[in-house]
Amino acid sequence: MPSLISQPVKRRLVIVGAGMAGSKLAHDFEKAHGDDYQIVLVGEESRVGYNRIMLSSLLAKDISDADMSFVDAQKMQEDGVDIVSNDPAIKLDPKNKTLLLASGKTIKYDQLVLATGSRASVLPIKGGSAPNVMGFRTWNDVDVMTQLKGSQSVCVIGGGLLGLEAAVGLVKRGHKVVVFHRSKWLLNRQLDEESAELLLNRLTQMGIEFRLGESPESFKQADDGRVSHVVCQNGEQLTVSLVVMAAGIYPEITLARAAGLETGRAILVDDQMKTSHQDVFALGECCEFDRQTFGLVAPIWTQINVLMKVLVGEEAAFVIEPTPTKLKVSGVNLFSVGKIQPSEEDSCIFFKDVSANHYRKLVVNDGLLVGAILYGNVADGSWYFQLIQNKTNVSDMLDLLVFGEAYCCPQVA
Image (cartoon, rainbow, N blue to C red; front, side, top):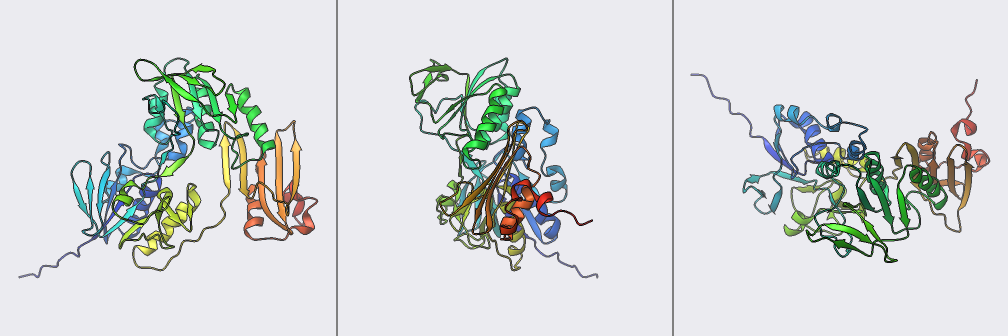
């Protein structure tokens, strides 16, 4: 009689959050360790693994629904990944290693990764709880905005990247948009006042109205509870059909905090992405390391690479590195990295070509480039970033530095 060979029991990795970070980890981990692991990906949205970065392009009609896929969810399922969508996790029990979903389903795990991302911040403005006040974080948010018929008046709160992308997309769909921004200039975390002025002029030409240094006083609601007017600080009332809150994000840590995990602004992790509880890890916008949180793709992809090794017992450690911000708003190229507001010890080098809408500002300290803003022509952005990252002494090229790599490092014939 032939002997029976028992199959080894697979370890179960459960990933909570089916956004870009969670779905990429599930995809990559299945490819590398699918023979040894049963992977479960849990998402609260009905759509799984889409490219959140492309939401603004979808709103602006620059791409179609078919272009939104980030991972092939169907192929992942065929390869053995168990994908649970439209069923958010509501309770985590680290002691018994179980996860309870809204549907009542309980999932056991050997290792758990929290990739719960973030939520859109809602400013405490009177009337802000109305049904036509929304954030701009999900595909469903885009669906709501695309359902606006004809030409409507829309108020966008926030002149950061997300708010400007929402405003551009809505204007391209034929709506009248006014943007409120508390700071004196747009993209105040990435740009200085002069480069922001160039961006303001460009967006104003598109038909967007701006109210800088101002937040709405309140929202006036109609009998049906929906916001009908935005009340400005000077008492002026603007008629609106929709309000889009794009005034920042906050990490989604409700599940982790209720389970007793240590949290600060986000879920606290060490350099191996481990939380305070055994076999529970955190990744992406919901985690906090060395008092920093993460909203850009580059460091989150690094976290995934670290976690891929740590989960299977290999050595790896996450290190924070400077990350450039490349922004593209309505066809205007922007690049920002490092220190953009100089101190007394810094010196600045400027270049401005009004006719070409080209602006550069370089911040130098003790012979080292420590910050750069490029508006219009961003071709040298990666080179400036390398100079900053490598701590290259630029003292001998200060006269030509603002003109870029071609002038400072000419090719030898």
